[in-house]
Length: 360
Image 1: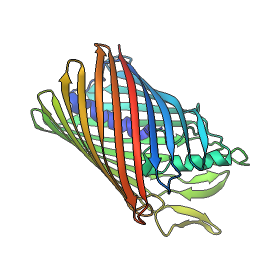
Image 2: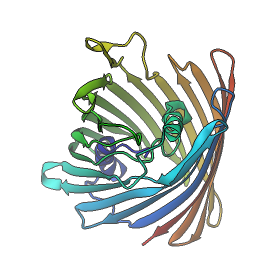
Image 3: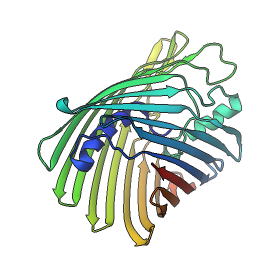
Image 4: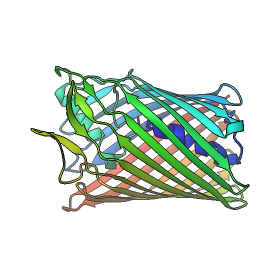
């Protein structure tokens, strides 16, 4: 699923402090379901699409502990691609806050409930889903058993400045991603290092900066080393300002991964060009209440991808939200992206989303 285990634990640790300058686990219970259809139109992408229904349950266990569960179902395909559909993996996150030490302990578990053993035709569809510029809600349906312990230290230095550091380790179990594989695929384990700072610029204005650095282990098929991804760094900046009940949100993100090592006759060798493109994304959204129980967010987005993709995208979106009652909300989204590859091939993407949130 889109949220990676280790990174989510660490980012959440900083967010709990930043929102209220208090080290308290949110006590607002909720369950949500989304129905999302994403479709890309381009000769280069085989008309790729995905229909997904992600589910989430958040439940505080106490003032210091919480449980977060993600699961769902997805179906994907394209003009020249086999249909890939089934349940997705179930991800469970447990957080425990130790206020006296300014620490948040986290444990993430990926249960392999999703479809992971594929036919070769389904595997080609899964490769398409994983392309980063498509930004599908569910980039893969299933993988092996993963577990990720982590810890975040977050310290408010004043009423306007909060600083955080974190680390996590992700163990990844082996699995067969193609039915007729003789040996298991063992993804390399991961180490994530995270730093973040939140600054209160004014009474209703905040700025947050987060950095996530990921170190990857070596992927194996059986005992044979076949791939070692290069280290990855993600830098995110978010500006947020309230004008009464209206909210302006501006975000920028830079993501870069070093060159990978690939299997050769003499062992692993460095690839000549990057497999994973550098990414730059900008997003701006302005949400305003439009009447009783109804609000609307206007959005704009820009994304740029380097070698080997070389693609620029820009677009806009509308995200209305209906408050059906004090405990029920219905968020919606309609989004559109358009752009072209360096060779001139045009690409357009559409997103339609409707959700339902129940607060307890």
